[in-house]
Length: 529
Image 1 (cartoon, rainbow, N blue to C red):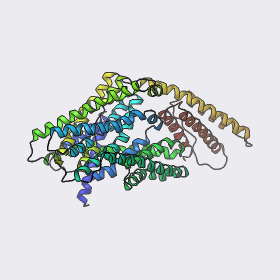
Image 2 (cartoon, one colour):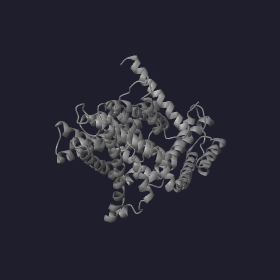
Image 3 (cartoon, one colour):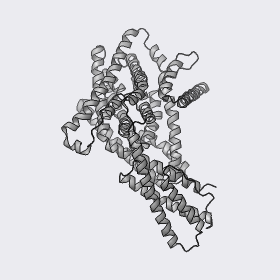
Image 4 (spheres, one colour):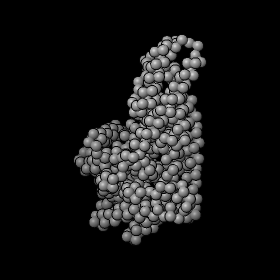
């Protein structure tokens, strides 16, 4: 790789970050602005041609993005929405693959059916980055947001497996329907097993190490380890990565406070950089793809692409309504397990959250050079990706506001639960302080005790107040060092109570993270000079 190539990549990253920063400053959806800017830049003279390398996307970008999303997800909420997530990440992906494949084959007779199904698999999985970002900013309720996140975590595995089967059928290495089903089950099952094994081993190591730099350095490598381990045995590397992220995210509260504090910052920065580059790369593919259509009829290709874009959007709407309500009508068990009927407004919002992303483009570019109608499939994929990002992405905020979908009640309930949890944790910490004072043979300064009590009581009264802590290195039992030692014991007790309340489902993971972060920050101040 020569220096000009490196310079071009650096300029691309810098430009992407500048555009994303401007979008955040103006409160605009960064993914959409990045795609549009990239599309315009692809025709600016002097801008290098950045051809999307599918191996780079699938091996470099996808694992950390999936891992970070899983790490930040709630295993408990995903478990509660497992049926809905499965219907979207598996059922909808396969349904979309078949519908788009059939329509493409009927509309373009010279396109073999297997190649048409490959196209269906390419454009089947939505990328929820833009939808989740908009949903969080506008206060989308927790359940539909969790379903969107869960769908995006697992649908790539389904789509990539279906894609490989379809491509294999075209190039002569395909398998029958039964074998394809077995291959899918093996890929998913082995991916889960590999993910659990790596996650368990990583969890043991993370509990032993308290050096935040070491643990987070390991965390940066974990998604690549999990992905490669899965792919090496022909399992789903995507599922392996997601399982590792979910497991460690659920167990994160048991690791050192430094690991948690630095992990949040590390993965926020990594997400920001990778997502910015990915979305601007999507836009930059426009000119190279159009140049590949020389000698073809532009009007015919545009017609094909627009029709299939409409099919992709409508297919999701058609699937969402019956898959949401029909199982509840047919199964008493589902009605008992899920007593609250999903509001129709939530279903409408989820139906419109089908924006496609870079995985679809990467899969399209991964098609063999001699694949039937490869240039046409690339163009159709690009139009569907851009069309859903722009049309659905720009109208998604309007739809949420128009339907009046809001998480205000959830936030109010979270405030109540957090206040109650803070009170329970503070009561336990004060009781522990009394026990330590009763057991202590030292002459504990009354000032230290009063500060500890006041600080804990203030947290119980003001759940949102971030408290400072004592400073100075630990050494001999001076009042300051005694204060730090006793306060750490109290913080550990508060953490135990908060984790127990989360495990008992009395508070949500988001509440747990906010409370743990307050305690982590305070503990961090106890060891700072």
